Image (cartoon, rainbow over all chains, first blue to last red; front, side, top):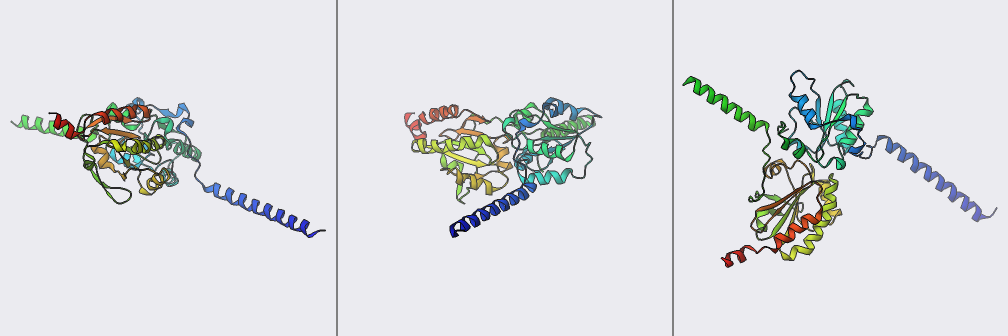
Length: 167
Length: 176
């Protein structure tokens, strides 16, 4: 057996071992990683609530009121948000997803929840998709996402629906 | 007398409630651009009024806003192209944290000043409740156009060129 054959064998085995190690590490990291941002377009139409309907729910006396969570930018939330809404972290960021997870962790899975963002045009919003997927994955069965076609300003504030500002 | 007082109090209460519940969405077109002084991401003072005499493109953006990142390199190209004619881009990041904003500014090699905005500045500009949001301000400091959401940059460029073609303030006063 020539020495070059042995060297080639050793190099091959070392390369395979290194490959396996990298794969294992990547899998372990992926287990805890935040999933890549899902487009708002992945949310089924049946799970959307239109602004008119949302406003009706809020205005109707005796109607079940949802837990409203804003999953976009805090700065936008502080400028204006739906009365009673809570800031729940930015859906496109890992800290935001953790914040949302923490907010809903103790809630019954039948809780009526409405998520919204309105940072950008709907097909460009990076926040509502991951937030919706998280709640669905956690087993929440009554989650709706407020459909804001262009942004919160145009599709909610400028339509004259109620808002409040501050934290 | 007592009845008038009661009615007055009720009216005042209703007015106050309405003011509290409705966000004052303003139309700033053809009004003076609200003045501001901020520190840019390099720590330099950024005062809007210091660009008087130039056509200013004031762009509100954020790192998580995909359409914003399409526009920003175009604005940087315009800064190079139209800067010598008196054009100035000013970027305001509406990110909650400056670190990602600074990173993106470096990655896109932006050649114009960028500062961090806040909710007070947003409110003064009629509410920054959707991005991107861009204002075009003429050489006299008056807002002449407002573009919200994904906009064809050619439309914005056409307005920029139109404003650049208008006479500078000193030329206007000499013509009088």
